[in-house]
Length: 329
Image 1 (spheres, rainbow, N blue to C red):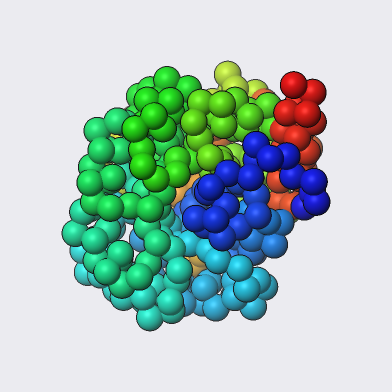
Image 2: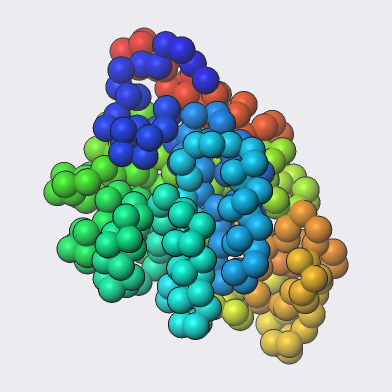
């Protein structure tokens, strides 16, 4: 962590989240578990664990494991729209019982849930992909907005580029705005700050790190990829509540090999469960089977780095490049 952080990087977001660097970990389901979230926290950023549709027992274990590695603030990411109501209720109850300090929500804006969490003293961060969703989230009373652009990997909420959407929302938001999509370098971070962001939420850049729970095959594909190796598709939606678009690396599925395949085709195993063809499940560290036919989430930022490293090293490289660029100006 640099001791001489450039003043432009000392945004109000740092006080809001109580962290030292304007970097958040994207709450990637399965990938952003306690090791990666803790590593980001210890590097000075804000760690987020992706617990979308996960059982309460796993949330409990992951929160406790994270607290063994760091005493810094963190968040848990949930997606209400894609979670069965009973499970969502139990997840929220567990997070409150565990005194999780902040929650990141995504997809539809659940105003009742936002207000419930706020009443319980939980900081609420909401990721949005459109001006309309931003307005709904602000009306619900969120503390921070993450603005996601079309360039982002994983599930993509909107259809507008980050730099087309970010300045519009930042100009009217009374709360800190964080940029998401296409950011994996210091130059990209500075560009986002120039358009009104107070920090960046990193997914792809931190998926390909030593502490990530992504399978090594997934990481290797990202490290070798460039922006035009990604594709925006609705093919991977088998276990999602709607045929939602995602950005992934091109593979046999996106190339049409399985156009007439059965929906119940099992292509692998992970976390003790089968992985089905067209599932939203990306290959995790313990995955076996046809790994390259799974959802290889990847944003268009992949061309900004090509070396494996730790989360702390990735964050330091981004912050140092941003600092050098700002000083040169």
